[in-house]
Image (cartoon, rainbow, N blue to C red; front, side):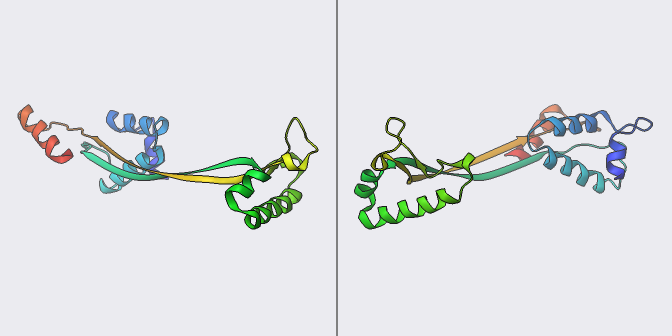
Length: 165
């Protein structure tokens, strides 16, 4: 609670760098995570931003996207793909599930042919066609250095390279 009051205080404003980081967290992606990092920094500073330095931060993330592909196919195509017994079972389960759905959601598992809406042999049934899994690795790095002592600019960049690399 004190953290949020301190961020929005008009009487005793936070340093300009901190205000910029808060603004970034409010509009950017992963805003809650960035705000949490600021909160942890605030705790580390014992609740006093005072003269502070924001250090180098690096983060890596791995994610897996899983995509399933479904298609609506006729009874004949189902029988060719799955065989008679499995096709009949799938059609029976879809028919039962379709009966339980409210009118606004009808057509989720079974769809009538628009040209021949009453011909049952032309109804299409939802069928699993395949799955695709993609792995993504993302590396983000950012470096901010504040000079408070006499240091050569090349030394500062070398430190940043070592921290990121």
